[in-house]
Image 1: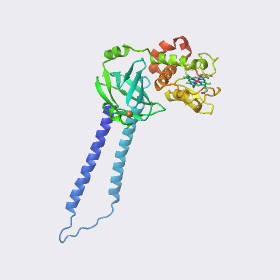
Image 2: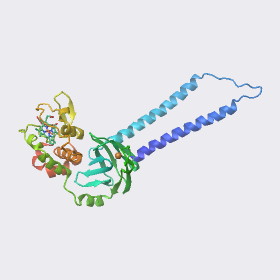
Image 3: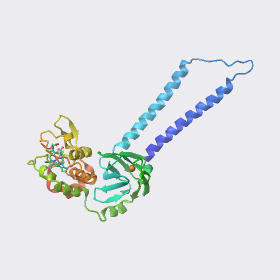
Image 4: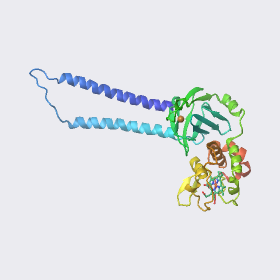
Length: 321
Ligand SMILES: [Cu+2]
């Protein structure tokens, strides 16, 4: 995004610079030209409709250009491509914890391959932080209690600064890190070295350990909905609303199930607030996502690891109930 943001910014600088020059040039010229001279008294000149329309219409058009251009850049920056590689980020006072779908974890470092779209799914364990990579011109607040996302595609290998850009306590200024952009081959070697297995597989384990499986079975006999193919699909709620099962929805189902009850089920799902860490929630989200073909981005490799036996039902994301 850097080139787009910079182009807009340079345009703003040129426009405001030229306006300043124009204002000062007129100021100096008029002050000299119409000054009070002995025998020639300064006179007040008032009113010119043509002039007023001109200096309203031209700035209006310039502002609309800035508005449209800014909106285009903004929506591009705010909309992660559907097939982006997903990376989970958990912020805490005062560090960045990163977890890749492949299972690699790192602290205050984020390894990414050059030329690939990367989507960060971020949350905080305590206060508000902000994930800021100046070189990529992206910054996004990281909030406790929900996910926020941002995305980028690194175009040049190298090491780039990561800063926390939201004052978050005593050692806020030390909450920094490195974005390590590698050539694809180097990155493959890194991502495959010494990992604990895919994040979705970790999630599957937690899903069993916490007893989620007792209610959420892969057939229709469970007391809770079958979660196959749910992710990315619309869900009908008890109160009549329809919501999309995205990361924030799954997260809320786990931590505050009362907030959105699925239609046609007893409200028996207990809250897991306080029982699971942010990392465990991320793993559960990754697992539930892996049960669905709706996300082309990671469905591929994850389905192979955790949902191969139940895969056939998925392509049209068949809805539960
Ligand atoms: Cu911070």
